Image (cartoon, rainbow, N blue to C red; front, top):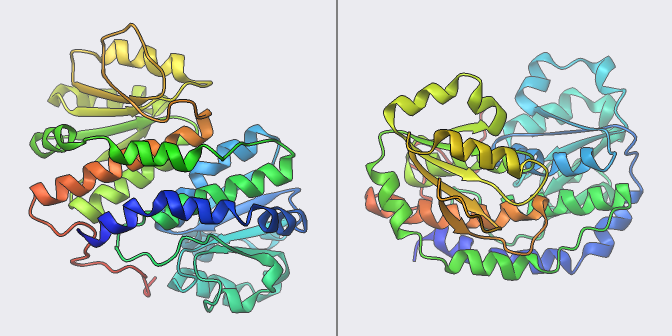
Length: 336
């Protein structure tokens, strides 16, 4: 079994571990100024934030997101001071951009909080313990993020639920993740191995997950996959259908599911179309894989991600790569 597979299969239990400290996370969250919040990170950490922020915004939390490297070079100290909390997100707590940002903005340390899988990291040591949120994912062996990505999303959702006073029931999530990881993905992996072009399309919290899927297939299977949000795909990139690509949509029942179903109708016959969904449909415009049944929209994307993690693992083997092993990259990026 590959390191990536070990990490992938441990995700449901990692989420259970995180849920066991939900009270501690909520208590810490309520101590922060959440009048206006900016989340910043790199890579999978940034995408995890992106996957949770639509939930925060839809529940009245003024939350923004920015790539940390761009904040370092082009951020403005006066504008950053207007945020109540600057939420740093880093799996390792050791990435080059994170440490530089904290050193460059020492005057803003009092506004910073950290979400990390390493509460003993260099970054964490710069902050009081009450402003360090451990994601409790355990050891992650693979270059491709699995447990840390999922647990970071769940941590931000828990923080957001505390801030907004909304009731987000996470209890069913681990079991639904296990269901997703038990589904056979060999056919989809074979389909992607033959594809000239592959495109992933999603909306809402699925946008961050879609961006992570793009990164994951690059890291794990060494395959370039294009991602677009559902609306953006119609604004020009729909022309990519000329090559009859494989199009994978993430479409749980929710605010924009009718729009995604309409997209399916419009592109059916022009591509090989697969949709991951948690509801049945009478339409035969897409091959429908039922995942995340019974979960609300904002949580549904996590088991869908699990399904595609398993697909990426199988695709890496088809392409004769060790899933999750870096060739040119590494788990922690130490150069900006």
